[in-house]
Length: 227
Image (cartoon, rainbow, N blue to C red; front, side, top):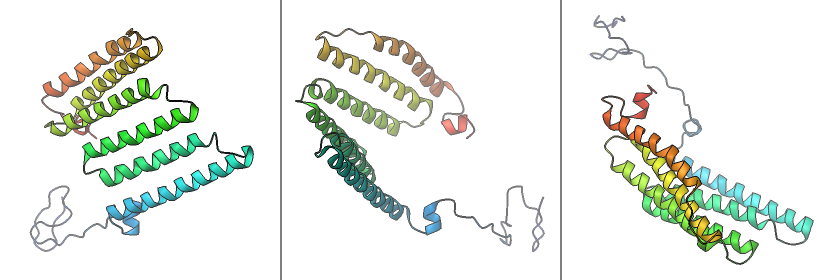
């Protein structure tokens, strides 16, 4: 055990300085992140990252359009990657500026994704698969994500229960995909592969939720796995 040079008190393990006179040497913590090296705040670092991503996306869009014009003399195949890049940048923008309002953020992310999908459908032909399949499946995905986020936010302890809820949401999404796909292709719903998914996911989700509410310790995942 260390001893304080001034008062002679023995220091407990883990103490760097004396709690009475505070004469111990303080260890200098080296910066571990780029924003700490550059000495900028988290908000400024996020803004710089957003500006950099915008420059990269615009550069990529320009290069793709020029290549399309150079080799084909028009704009055709480049519409898909250009739309995808624009969707990525808009998604980053929404997440950055709307992260304090999760419901509004999910709504804008949903609108952004639906816009990309409807453009994809228009590029290929008339709107034939967007309304019956893409729109309800995508809407179901974001609704389920919002429900999981909301239930996790109101839960007193977040651990295995979050994993269980996420698995149940994935299971419901798989059922929705098969239902809307069957209605579009065959006009009749026939539950097949999503039933197999349900049989595999629900027992695992039930075990996770059971463990969460029955364990006397380790309610948090980091403490349970000693992370």
